[in-house]
Length: 246
Image (cartoon, rainbow, N blue to C red):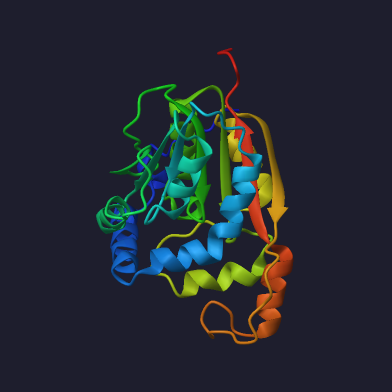
């Protein structure tokens, strides 16, 4: 079975879903939340970097790059001959990313949606995505785009805290007025396999840092909830495009 992007009117995601996402992330850019994301998500980035089979001349695409914190880190992994491209649907996030004085010479940033990437077929060696895939209105379309732009044998790594098995994150959608898909690990494995990927699998990534004694009452309503969140960890899905076309 090969899943197809939503095409029937009854199956279409809300046509305003991307606009609401863009508005939310533009607001986050104005609030400087990109730097907060770097602090809270860096352990996911480091876990991906440890798994990433990147060569010094490879091209890496970072989906939903925010203010570019992980793209800048990845650029050091493929320096000096490789390139990192960060894309985000938020013009204000991309402006912040482009204006960062710490940008290496081999990184660039573009405005784009995951369902419609401005890259040629078979042009990317590796794709990363941190804490964003559950926002994509049409996840199957995004999966097909990832497959399209990857070179044969290219790999993808998608990390997220908001997933079915981590019930301590499910209430997040009560605080965000955007579409959020809550799928389990098996469902994501099935989705990516159906998009054509092989060697698809999942693992859990858990932070090693000490827990704060305080909770904010929004993202975590109690310390017990925060402890459960950390114990469940983040979901990391990975796979690769077949080395040769069938």
